[in-house]
Image (tube, rainbow, N blue to C red; front, side, top):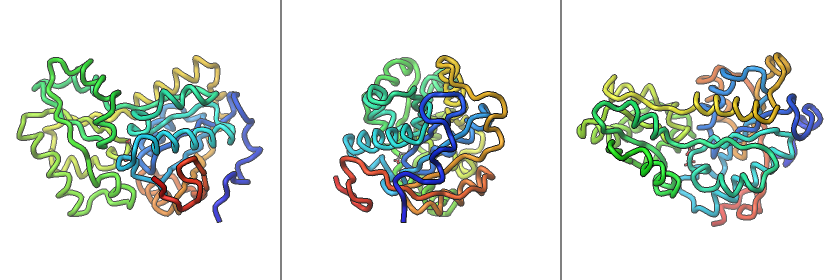
Length: 295
Ligand code: DGL
């Protein structure tokens, strides 16, 4: 039976701010593991709590209020577990709710957004593709990004319907998935794109399948390393960096609102991290009962 507050977690970290407290990383599901990988490489001394809201993924099919409701509830849950900072490792949740959640949580937040700026800087053909969820693409934050950086660069924005679901079931290379990807990528190649923005944290896990289709014709823009560097800056600004080796040997703690099987599998195969995943119930205004899909 999932517990709201996992007993194994309490008391291990000092609660609230403090350099030994963990960093919370959250995504609608498994995509944030691509950010976790970069954070571990950049900040090996930080303890990490990772929450996948897999019971309610994909967020890209949800309404705005639902996404904001879940993001706030998970942020508050991580604060209760003692997180000193929160990485919203989900473009969709960032696009919809980061401003509101930032106001309500007492810890610093780092969000993620599609790498439009680096794509505009590096595209030679001045045509770039963007794969992201429908919610991200239609958000005001994304539209503002485009207005800011896309003056002389054409961005072909493609919703990646079905891709998050594939990664959630650990499908990173089936024939169906490759056919889906080809349908999204071929028009970009035909239009002369030389750059592809991976605007969803699930998509870096599809890099091999994408490479098989596009070869080296598209440079892939994945912002996870930039996010890890931003987290480093934020921790430094707030005096929250872990002392060297204070948690360096500890594995991240993984939590899921789903059953966690796929999370464990993906962490083992793609991140080479062998850790158990604890199932948790994180209630929110829109999901009072554990299995409620209330809309
Ligand atoms: N990883 C999330 C993102 O970056 C996926 C959103 C979803 O669940 O649809 O947008």
